[in-house]
Image (spheres, rainbow, N blue to C red):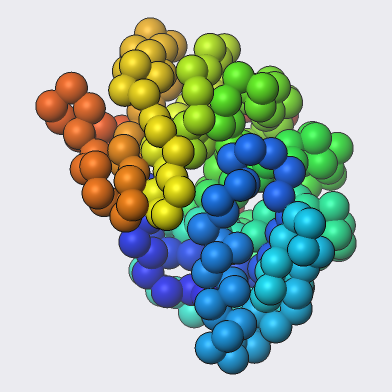
Amino acid sequence: MGDKSTIEWTEATWNPTTGCDRISAGCDNCYALTLAKRLKAMGNAKYQLDGDPRTSGPGFGLAIHSDVLALPYTWREPRRVFVNSMSDLFHARVPTDFVFEVFNVMVATPRHSYQILTKRPRRVARLASSLPWPKNVWMGVTVEDQETAWRADVLRDVPAAVRFISAEPLLGPVDLDLDGIDWLIAGGESGVGHRHIDPAWVDALQRACASSGTAFFFKQWGGRRPKSGGRLLRGRSWDEMPTPKLRAQALVTV
């Protein structure tokens, strides 16, 4: 899983693990869970392990793929890489040693920028002081509503060069403290049974970003298909990208 990505804010995906478990409302219509079921039916070897039907599903059991660890070395041209578009690197069942192996690859390939997104920031915080944080590693959390806004507070203690929030699918208004947050991505849900997104929620986030100096990226309004509603907010697209920063804890220079 290292092909070019159609996700607007990244360029490629890299999945050293696959599979996950739903833990909050933002997971209810998980695109990765649906895709894993399809890939299992197609016979894809990486999606043959089933997850707990209460929280996961066919082909979506947490699986480790050591065979793809070296993939970034083969990409000669620099690219932005979404790490684990089909999983969560900080899932409790991903061995700590394997998390370190993934980080070691990122340290050794400074030509790429790596975007890690998690719904489990407490594990990130527990491991943060032991992990290398090169300037090419961006660390993000999903915040889909006010109930999950605490994830951003935990993220602030992680010494990543870029800290970001993915407010997608945005399920309600969110009042966020954006101090120390470099980038915010907002977007609506797509697919059958997609949930409503109110333009006022997005507008408020964009204005909060402007006030705090946080880069803002609006991905989509959503609908039956990802591009059904377009991606214009107040008549324009928002494609701002963050500038990596040095944090209080020294970063690895690569």
